[in-house]
Structure formats: C-alpha cells, structure tokens
Image (tube, rainbow, N blue to C red):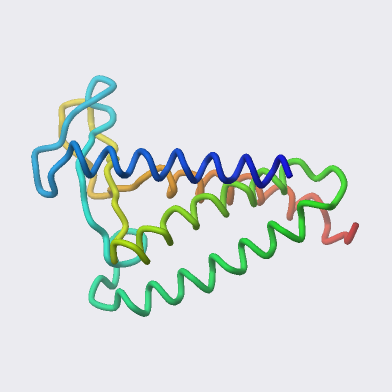
Length: 156
C-alpha cells in the first residue's frame, strides 16, 4: 500500500507543478531563469511524443502512451506484493506516477504541459522542454536498469 501512496503523491506533485506553470507562464513567453540560469522555466504544450515528435499524430500518440502506461501500471501492481525488491518497486512507482501524470494531461487537455528547460547559465535554453513526470519516468527507468541487469532474470 505504501508504494501506491508514494506513486500517488508523486502524481499529485507533478499535477500541481503543471497547473502552476499554466497559471504563471505563457506559451511562447521569454524563459524565466532560476538556479543562476542553469534551469529555465518556459511553458510548452506538447501534443506529440517526448521531444515534441509527431504532434500531428496526437491521437495515435495518446493511444500508444495509454497502452504503455497500462503495461507499466500492471507491472507495478504485480511487483508490489513481492518481497524485498526495493529498487524495482521504486522504479515502477516513479514510472507509474510519471506516466499517469502525462496521460492525465493528454486525456484532459489534449497535450502535455512541459515547463522546464536546461539553460547554459546565460539564459539560453536547450531545445528540450520537460516536466516532473518526464523526470520521474527517466529516474524510474534508471532505477530499473540495475534490477534487470543484476537480477539475472530470476523469478521470485
């Protein structure tokens, strides 16, 4: 149960930060530097996949993301009752929260709200714009890599 609560709290954090970004940042406005310009706040509505690919295929992207999210959520639910396996559970909790956060936006807003960009310290943003759900997905995947490499495929 604690893993479900953890994942839900992460989802709520992502939800809240996106709504704050929507309230405070205008799409296309000049980026707002934070952390000495190493991080920039700029809002983008992404109808496509990660990186803004395939925005013209938003319905197909939504369906593919929904299928992937369902697989991730089912994997997470199957993993929860297993003993130990902290990194696997944490990774799947992060993946589930991130997927749910972006799916919520896709289904309710028809696009994902991205608002973070890495800066060069002088206010120039990178082309990539992302959100906390994307960070959760990346972190969750990174946690799962060692569990798959060192588990040796053992079933427990």
